[in-house]
Image (cartoon, rainbow, N blue to C red; front, side):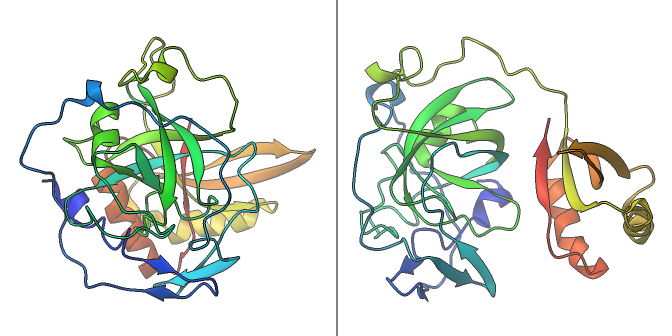
Length: 273
């Protein structure tokens, strides 16, 4: 089991009450089951209309001193970032929505999406994609956007590394399923992902170029030529984005994110082209 997976903890054990409080169960390292699983026999989740779960949907909640806000709805939701997975440690335990976590089912945990939400998750390195039901909160690791069930992670081929670069896209009930997915095909990889190699850690975005240069100078010890400034135009306004990268190793990115606190940088996001 990779060290990355071992730090993906406290996911299904964060039980959110209506007022948004969180109950914690002592953490321990996670692992995969000892038996092999035939993923071809496990269908993808199929989006359907369901009421919001009675638990797990407060307006906001706090974990480790950070506050998270639950979205009003998932319509049009798309994000890219790093996915992880969780397995035996939480198998059979209660999820934030009140359902029982089953590492052999097509489910996932997310910090902000309403529970439940159905999402298409695409591995940006190999083009494989699946559909899962988000029924839990997490992952609360600083550098992850979604925690997949064990079987879902197998289908996306991120088990060995423990993590992977993904796109998460919300689906609506009645929305046409991707080719073959409605029949429960394990993965669909007709079109290989087409993106530039590497990803970035974005630590700031400024209208004033001098402010961007000051932050770049502040982070110069992270590595020569590693911190750069790029420009983008949003509604006619030029923004100067301070980014670290390109990076190809998620463990390296985790190490950099940990170091950012020493530079007084507490907010960041992963950017994937």
